[in-house]
Length: 115
Length: 115
Image (cartoon, rainbow over all chains, first blue to last red; front, side):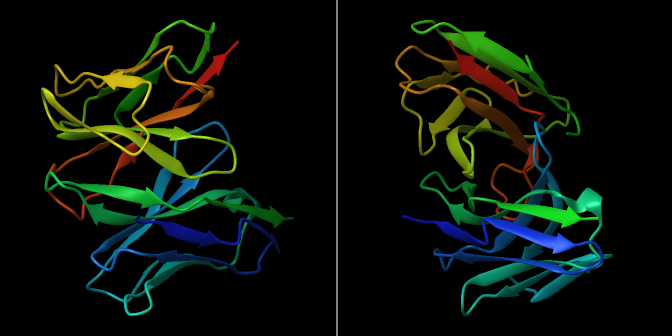
């Protein structure tokens, strides 16, 4: 079935360094790719998303790149800060039998930014 | 968390009991979703509803039931048939029921523990 693979499962970086999280999806029809940040005990918060008609999108220290041919997309966080420490999830949209759509989530990356 | 509320935040249940988790949104969104999150794993879809009085099974619907009598409400019942109900439950909503490029917004979650 459809799936999204996310790597690495844990990532530890020094404050100020960059962090990169990578995802691979299986459904070639997927055309929407959001990234969520989840802090402990809270619901996921959307931090950035990208649609299939663009290859890259940036919002301050956060950027996402998409390679539709390879079915890869990545999250890049520059100048990391301790408050960036959280679990990050990627997701990809897939169509359903009733003409709606749903998101398939990766398994998450726990990012730790060391002061 | 926006305009999505989930209650209660923590819930304890004895084995063999049914329990209902509340999800309410004041965003006028058409679609609503229920996910289950287990430690170290991504979000798995339980049920979703694109419109009032209609809902569809997700990937792990066994042992769960839902209703959608009002646009703003999508309660989830965890029945005694669910073999391993202890988990973090997340509700989400999306504005456009047939849009495949719209974002899902999450509530704060309910942590269910079976004693």
